[in-house]
Each structure stands twice: as structure tokens, then as C-alpha cells.
Length: 158
Image 1 (cartoon, rainbow, N blue to C red):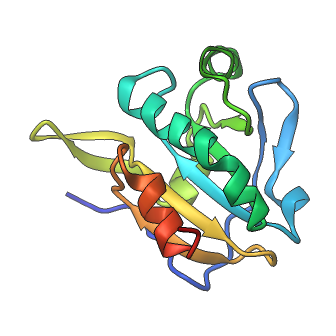
Image 2: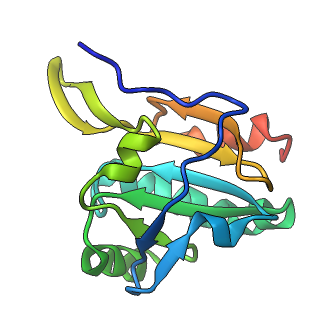
């Protein structure tokens, strides 16, 4: 099984401009000067992804108070993301990477194990990007449940 290329601390974060759940574009370069938590998840409205998104939603005010913006990225089309955001009251942008080019650039798309089988898909991952657009942390194969609490501890927010 070949692992996708992985990012590490100090690497430049691959820039992107992708449509959001509103259809408006969001560019990583527009967030320069802010710290960004970019998290990659497989599919909107699935149980694990919903749990993770709601955990980010519930932690958003403390993350923002510490200077972090949260952005979710998945291969879902903008209309599905809009339904996800509306259904779960998500208060941060969700970006659509239907062709998976950005997910691949971040090492968050490729071969993974799913119920004992090797499949191609989104590797649940979280990236902390500094104010200059460099990777501060790259976490791969994170768990949907409990990950936001672990991230908060690692960032010194608890």
C-alpha cells in the first residue's frame, strides 16, 4: 500500500481557492495573518463526520479567541455542504474539493484501510497552519470522536 505524500511542520501549506457551502470562493491566502485549522473529512452528513464537525462548532469560540480560524474540506459538492451546515448549525466555512486535488496536495487523499480493505478515499486529517502559511502541525488518520479535544490540549487551549 503506497502512502500519499505527507506534509510536515515547516512545509508551506498548499494554497487553494475552492467553493464554499455558499458557493463563494475561499482562498487560503486570504487567511494569511491568521492561524488556520484545516480539517479534511470524508463525507458530509455521515455519523463520524457530523460528530467531528459538531465538536469543531462547539469549540469554535475558544479556538477563535486563541486566533484560529476553522475550515472543513471534503469532496462533497457545495449544495451538500450547505445542507450539512444548515442541518447541524455549523458556524465555520466548509470548502468543496470535488476533484480531490487539494486533498491530494495535503496528503489527505489516497489509499487507506477501511474495515480491513484497502480503498481510495479521504484520510481524516487536521492541519494547523501558521500566520505565514506554513504547516505547524499535520495530523493524519485522526479519529472523528475526541480529536477536537485532543487538538485543543495540544494547542494549549484546555
